[in-house]
Structure formats: C-alpha cells, structure tokens
Image: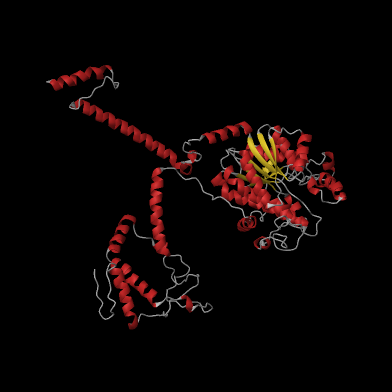
Length: 595
C-alpha cells in the first residue's frame, strides 16, 4: 500500500548513508520504522550524555571546594559610558602595562634603594609617598629616576588628615588602575628621647608614623586593591619586634604590648605607650614594629581569602648605616656598623637591603601570604676571624650575603602570633584612627538556583529565629535575670498547654512519626554530654543580684504558683490562643466567645 511505498522509499537512504543529513532525511509521522529508529537514536544519545555527566560528576567529587574557583573573577559584561571609556584610555596612556606600586618613606635609606630597583626593572610605575617633596625631587634627580614612571606625592604620617588627603589624591591619580603593591616602609626611631613627642592628632609620634598611619592607609586602599591581578601589602618589620631572637629578646627594652591598656584608653596625650606605662623611645620603636608584624598576620586571616591580597612582613637585616639612626649619638653611628659587620655578622648594606625589599614585591615566590620573610646571611656560629676574612658575610640568619635564593620564611615569636591580642590591636587601632574597613566576603557561587533557594531559606530562617528570640526566659531587657509576672507566666503556661499539649498530640505527633520513619530516631548519645541541666524558669535568682521593681508592669506581682485568683488570666490566655479570631466579653461573669 502507499504506507509501505513510503517506508521502502526510506530504505535506500539508510543503506547508502547510515547517518543521513538533515536535508535528505524526511520523517513521516505515520511511519513506524521512523518512530522506532528515532526513539532508538534518542535513547542512545541520552545514555551517552548520562555517562558523560556521571564521569564529570565523579571527577569533580575530589575538588568540590574548587568547583566555582574558575568563576571567582567572573563579572557580567559591562556597558561602558563614553566617560568611562575615556578614563580607561587615559589610564592606559599613563601606566601602560606596568604594575602600580605605592611606597612610603622613599627619600632616603631602604625606601630609596627599593625605588631604584623597582624602576630599573621597567615593570613598575612607582608613587612615592613622602613628607618632603623638595627633598624627594632632589634625590630623584641625583639618582636619575625615570620620572615617566615615578610620581611624588606628599604624605605626612604625623597627621591622619594628611593620610586621608593622600589617599584621595592617589585615587584621582590612579584613575582606573588598581594598586598592585603597597609597601609600608616609612619609619622613625628616636631612642635618645626620654620624653614623648606628639603627632598632630595628639598621639606619640613613633607609633603613629610607623604603625597607626600605615594602618589607616591600608584601610583606605584595600578595597580597590582587590581588583589587581596579584596585589601585595608589605610591611617592613624588625628583628627587634621578635623576642625569639637575640636582637629582639636579649636587649632591653623588649617589645611587649602587654594587654594594650594604652591603646584601649585612646592612646592620646599623655598616654604615650601602647601598654599604658612609662615612655622609652627605643621601646616605642620596637612596639611599633611588633604591631606591624601582628597586623600583617591578622589582615592575612581577615582579608586574604576575600580580597585575594597577599600580606607579609619582612626583616631585610640590620642596616647599620641607614638614616634611621640619625638621632643616635655620633660615636654610636661610627662604631655600630663596625660591630655589626665584624663581630655579630648581622650587618647589611642599604643597597642589599633595598634589593631584598624589592624581591618581596617582585619575586613570584613571595606571593605567599601571612609570612615573615628573612634572608640567610650572617652568623649563627663561627664569628670572629672568619667574619673578618669574609667581610662579615657568614652563612646564617639575618646578615649580608646569600643572594636572591637565600630568602626563607622565618619564625615569629609567640607575641606576634597572639591571635587574641591581634584582635584587640585591630579593634583599638580602628577606634584610634577612625579607619573604616570593608566587609570581608568570600566568593559564592553565581548559580541562580542557589540564589533562589538561599533567599527562600534566608526568609524562613529569619522568621524562625525571630520566634526563638521573641522570649528570653529568665532575662530582662537589660540582660539581667528576672522573675516572670502573672501575665507572662500565664502566657507561657497557655503556650505549653496548647502548642505542646493539644497540637503536640495531633499535628506534632504525625510530624514526629514521619520524621522517625524518614530520618530514624535521634541517637541517645546526641542527647547527652551537657555538663549542666537547663535551669527551670521558676528558679530563684542569685542572692547577689538585685532587681528593680520599677522595670516591671505597674500592678504586677511575682507568683510562684497559679492560684484561684489567677485562673481568669490563664483561661483568657488559653482561649485567646485556641480561638485567635474570637472575642471575649468585657464582663468577667459572662465570658462569651465567637469563633
């Protein structure tokens, strides 16, 4: 018949071309052979896809935590305005493909040598934050800085207002370019002072310049730094802030913040020390370096995961001939370098120290966060004649020599790693400086289903938590234990009678039965382990606690038992919960209900 003719018309195509193309394979909806072939093909395709999905799911089990890692930097397409396009073009013209580095205190010493190395690499555009612009311009001319890649900006670390102004001007200068490196290098050392000097803001100068102003600066720029591909914040520490070394733990005074009583008291004149005790210039410096290293560890814990920023501190070695010692006496400046070079072996020239700080900013190996970098040069043993023969360059920790590959992660003292004190330091420094820190949010999956479910569950969880928090048994609004009034006690009894009694024996019983069938019974071990039983609501408060009757409702009295006089209140509460849409009569003798 005509159907068989149509069926036969398909057979030559299948024989000649087992996988017909879309334009020469026409289906007749009434053709049983077509339906059979099509269903078989669909089934085969479905099975293959299922196998592929199963293999992909199995392969991803071991990497659940990284399931969405590839999307961590994903952003939806942006439609740029003409003004935004112009800003991006100007940014590209100014910085090109160079990384943007901000370094404080670069007109002399360690900072100056670091800038030399940064510019010599031709990979960085450097912003120098300095107190004296004229001096910095003279140094740049003497050292032959490429001013196309070096920009000078004023920043007086003795003033929080100056730090704020610098950060605002920096944001304008960088335009659409994020900061790739922030190097907190500036520091002051005033060991000869027997009295404190105060900053513009009324804080002891050494601590504000070395730590507090850098703390404030980081809070201002940290949010923008997360847009950089591999941002780093580097803090110049010191061996004197680590008391697990001879230089830090064997020479008085020792860096020690104690309980931060000085910071917690506001650290304003006349409070000159972080611990709240008497001022010593050398200790103020050591304490500030301890604060820097502690804060590097804390910011790593708080922001490394959420912002992708590497936080680290370094000790480049004892730069015995740096201007840092300009306030020491003449004889000290003359003989201290000799002592460090030929006796202890801990001497490091300022040029080599600048190379070390540059390495932490540049070397890919230094992208590790939450560490304290040191270099393997200078003695742990073998001093004396050997030091003279090798010009002080003996293998060991802290001194000169060793080269690029001698870098290693050094151990930090228990004081630096004191997490509880780090938290207190962050809180108190935030209050002192007025710093505003961004919220540390980790990346979450952009999955639409997850967002929908999350919003639904979020509302449900909020409602249930409000129910739980609607009552604080045994506590008043001031957080002190209280006894319950008659009306409150009646409401609690009514809730137990109705919700836990009547409903618990009907709907609740069905729910518990279903839960046991689906989930099984709760293990007995899960119900055990409490070291104290929950105290009943009618327990008397502690004898040493006092209560103010004025805080309770007027006319209310304390009750321990429900007596005949309280039956009407209890009855009203029970009926109000059973018949929520009912109305009670105002006449106590005639109680009528509408349901």
